[in-house]
Image (tube, rainbow, N blue to C red):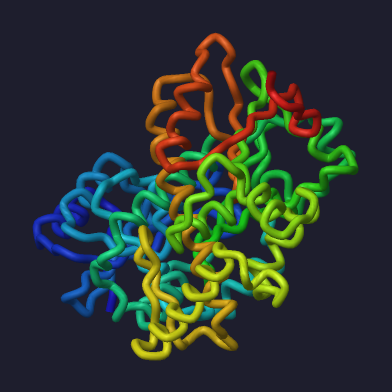
Length: 427
């Protein structure tokens, strides 16, 4: 049984029942629209201590609409709101009591409903398609979702970090990146322009839910994390302010690996260190360093202290994994468990290193974005070892931003350009 809530009086009744903890599944206008361009049609609200579910109507063809202010009041009254995607949820409801359960939920397929498939196959480009799919079918789908995830509606010890993670990428996504329309049409073909392009601004979307916790950034036909550097497509992206500044973290993974095992490269870069120890050229050291970290240490380099420490760390990590059935990452608290298929000592180390990269980046971005409040300069793209700033020259804040990276014992280089494809070393 469920209740349709479509008047203030009905919403008031729900408010005065005084539920503490609820699961909420938003039904947006269209499942494929970027959140910054999307709107909410319905809210499925399931109290954790009640069999009854509620469908709260904001905009649907079968019901009256309730204003956003009243709904925000209701949401603020709950102690804990569990959702499957906090990042998307806070675009529309920026309340503080939202907990993302997808980081701790085993992978599962979102239930399919034949009615939804029918409407999306025939009218999937309709921007408000969910407003005409019957309420009962939305409720049916939400009930199936809740049945799959209800046991995970508990506060995670990592909730504080997850909230930072989702807030950081929400902040980057909502900025968008300005484009040159002529260049864009030359290099890209979107699945549907209306899904992520608005007034010459393209919106990225980061997927945060994957094995290593390392965000991907593919949306509406564009992989923003792997833009070609040679074919001119990067010239599509232009600054809204004065010019772009990209801050690139030097030798990021070797530096993080050094932090993991307690090795200090002192005044050298990891590549300079390796080149000196192995008597090879710097460029060769860069290539071989990556192979040692991700493919296993070659016999001829096992005498080098840094790699000896890496191997000891890998062995200890695997022993912990075998004994406890999991290992827990620093900063994020993320656990790699025996549910992961084909895991081996090297892969476990690789996953741990990638998770440390993402976790460190979240802390850096958190500080950078907080620093940029009330400023025109903004972060518009994140690509693992670099961030792209749409920079306002008059603000003169690059040294202060760089100091944030230094607090994490990271070295950086900066490039600048009037398009993303014309970046050169900053003088």
